Image (cartoon, rainbow, N blue to C red; front, side, top):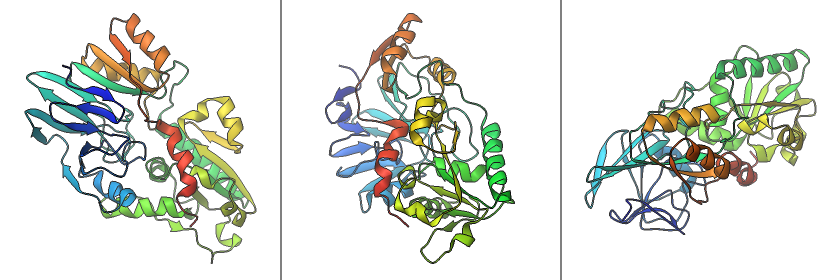
Amino acid sequence: MDLLEFTDRGIYCPRADIFIDPWKPVDRALITHGHADHARPGHGLYLSTAAAAPVIRLRLGDISLETVAFGEARTINGVRISFHPAGHIPGSAQIRLEYRGEVWVVSGDYKVQPDNLSEAFEPVACNAFISECTFGLPVFKWQPQSQVMSDINNWWRDNAEAGRTSIMGAYSLGKAQRVLAGIDESIGPVFTHGAVENTNEVLRKQGIALPQTQQVTDDQTKEDFAGSLVIAPPGALGSNWMRRFPKASTAFASGWMAMRGVRRRRAVDRGFVLSDHCDWTELNDAIAATGAERIYVTHGYTDIFRRWLEERGYDARIVETEYRGDDLEEASSGAEGSG
């Protein structure tokens, strides 16, 4: 019997009787991070890192949630379980499970490039590695974060000098704070959509330093926004909420901005390629660093990436999950409120 199985409710460890990021209600769930495709309502008991817990509670409300520190081990029915930094967003974790010397690791979402915000990714040695491959094509190659943030600040500065408002679309948990952490605050004031600001407040309370921001409210005028940067979830772009910014330039920050067709469909003035997932080279390096012989790939370009891994000697397999990577919050953000 394998240590982990793949069921219609999620990734399951039968020996410990626990699920990892299940998409249907279960009794016990280990949660890698707070994005909606990984942390869902309806489970009996949740377990996450302490650093991920505040945002999970913000999004799921009054749940039964226990926490552990990174590297702290829990043993359930003989299975040793621990959480290790995934580098995706603050508090995000890979989950390691060990039984009688056999080790499996579930990556959750992850990136290896440091962002000065999240805990740095740590490779975890294992026999079997379940890896997301959202950007598992050679065409995806990220520029250093410092270069992308320089481009974003230059775009904002040019707009400010022309009296325009700069409106940046970014997922409200993770990407919005990553952009905030890299901006040049001397350019002008920074405003946020309510969904972004609510997340900012939770992260600040747990000690994560972010620049000063103001939530966009109905009593502000268009003059208040001239020269400012406004950060909003993707669902707000193109909505009635945007009517308060009559003279504005729009942009979007995502790994998908590397694809011309996606940039065109977004209908924004600028696209900045900034992802919280690994690019092609980073995926390959991260997998090699685990030392795993068996690799399960999920969400993304699984067919191509599996074949690539198999040609390089891995026992590579595809596992179907309901994780959706960078596009999930885009689909759900329209319901995040209009404040």
